[in-house]
Length: 159
Image: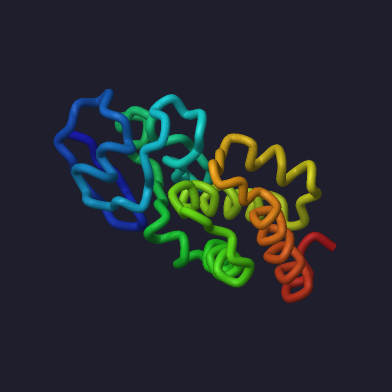
């Protein structure tokens, strides 16, 4: 039995300790926004936040997430930065097929929260673990820069 806090809600799940968090989120709790891509933490489609940090849920055993705060794509819009990232994704038209985008948004949100004024190199480093088979990387970078610029302009962050 694992006690998890997912999107602010306590959940008790009766699963093996070594079950990947991804399968708990998708199969046991029915939150299918977090995607399975490779199962080896190489594509980023399964990215969620664990205590605010982006992690690959496909290789994270559920026991490692117990007692920590887990945020999935379903709740990222409840966060000010996550909401801004989602809005920029729509405004810029980032998605093409869309399969990788939940992981992209989770990584971009963590980047901007940790670095309110990222450089191109910062963006490339933070997003390097997220693969987009459609090649929307230029639009992803544009959306991240737009969110960062608006946040700096509106809040004075990173002056």
